[in-house]
Amino acid sequence: MSTSRAGAGWSPFLTIVVVLTCIGLVTSVPMLYRQHERSREALSTSARTSGWHAYQTQLEVVKAIGAIELALVDPSASRLSDARLRLAILRSRLPLLNRTEGNGALPGIERWREDLVAFGRMLDSYLDSGGLEAPAPGIRAALEAVRADLDAVQSTVQEIERAWITYQIGLHERELDIAENPKVLPGALLILSGLMLIIFLLVETVRGRRRLRAMTAAEEEAASARQNMRALIEATPALIVVYDPETLKISFINSFALALIHPSPDHQDWERFVATARSALPACSVDAPWGAFSFQRSDGTLLALRGRTRPLVWEDRDQCALILGDTTQLRDAEYQILQAAKLSTLGEMASAIAHEINQPLTVIRMAAANSRRLLENGDAPALAAKLSRIDQQVERAKRIIDQVRRYGRKPSLRSERFPLARTIDLAISFVAEQLRMANIRFVMDIDLPEDLVVEGEQTLFEQVIVNLLLNAKDAFEMQADEGAARERTITIRARVEADRIRIEVLDRAGGIPEAIIGEVFEPFTTTKPDDKGTGLGLSLSRNIVRKMSGDISVLNVDGGACFTIDLPKARRSLDDKVVA
Ligand code: ADP
Image (tube, rainbow, N blue to C red):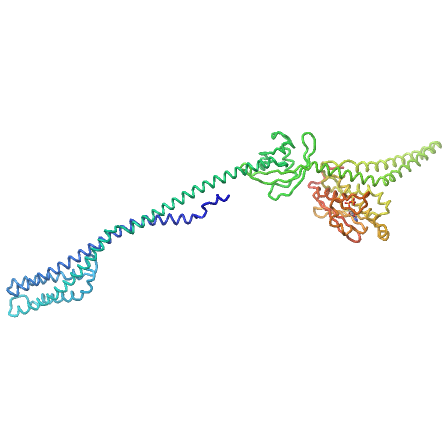
């Protein structure tokens, strides 16, 4: 999947920066260009105007000097008037030359500013004094003085003009420079922005291609992953059924499931299957625990299934997948072992059962002999009493035989709700005679409501209790020497605690040997001789209790073993169909 991340290094932030820089560069180029042109224009206009003023002033100085010279030669009224006029014109020029701001200001004029002001005042004094008004005797001397002052003005104005010329030459050189290297900066900026744009476009194109390639690769990868998953699901030896949790419409059934439930996905069995699984298993979720249930196929056979429901995205939709293992064979094998264990218990109990049946038979025999005698004597009322006694004893024998038959029958494959207190009673009555014969006292401390039901297979649960009681009896027998001193008592205690039920079977037969207490529920753990123990009783008991969503544990307490069974109450109370 590494390709899908290609190009991730070029962040959107960088893209924005590049685009903004390009826009900035492109817009700044014409602005710079325009500004450059404007300042050049302004500069040359200003230089030209200021140069013009300097030149005009110079001209006026020359003209004024000429007029003064002429007046010196011929100091007539008209010459004097000309001279005054020239001086006035020169005077009017000086402020233009002396400007320091605005268009036409001469660069560096500040240097001569004071001189020019002084010249202005001087000219004003000549013009205002009236000394040059009329040909008078001292006129020549006055004109000479003006002539001398004008020389100073001329040399200053010449200096100004020279400075202007130097500036003009510099300006010209700069213009030439600019003309030779036209628009270097804007050009460079344009090239730079163009380059950046090209790089940006190239990078974008490469990124786009990579993205496209990554997307195509990801799509191909996803498609192949989907294909692989489908192939895997098809090939897996588990039942997999995908359905919509809203509509319960099935969208996929793998071949294993088709072979096991029904080959046609449209068959109504499938609807029933999903409904059964949904009601038996914990709700569809990522961490849904495992659950088990049975399903009856249309041919009547009962499948045992174990698994869970998990959410998954299938065909681009959120759906649920039933993932189940077929545990039918395991269940059958387990039931066969259970049956064998039960039959072995029955075998062990044969002498006790025979002894129990023998008792009513002996009573019947005696009652029959007595009946014959009473018949001969014609004592009808006593005869009737004897016959009813026979009847009672037959009933007692029948009860014992029924118990044996019921215990020996194969367990049903279905889980049902059954009354707990009565089932414990049945188990106890089944071994009571044996315990009595072994001289073991039995204490029942059962506090359960009559209508309390649990869910499971009744005869199997009965077998759990029988196992625990017979194990306790065996423990007393194995501890014969020490046990003589102990109280030979087995206590069975049962209580409801909130929504759980707790059943304890305690004895005082020395407890479980420390060496095996940790693995006493593992198969084939036994301390009994080969012909007596298989080591399967407790392991089967644990399986039975766990299938009922409960658990069994053991502790050594008070010189004996205490087995505790913890069970949940059935989800529904005792109502329509409960095993009698
Ligand atoms: P088995 O009875 O065939 O040996 P179990 O699984 O029923 O198989 O019991 C395993 C072992 O646990 C027994 O062999 C015995 O050593 C020990 N055990 C079970 N119940 C008791 C008990 N009440 N007191 C002492 N030991 C016990």
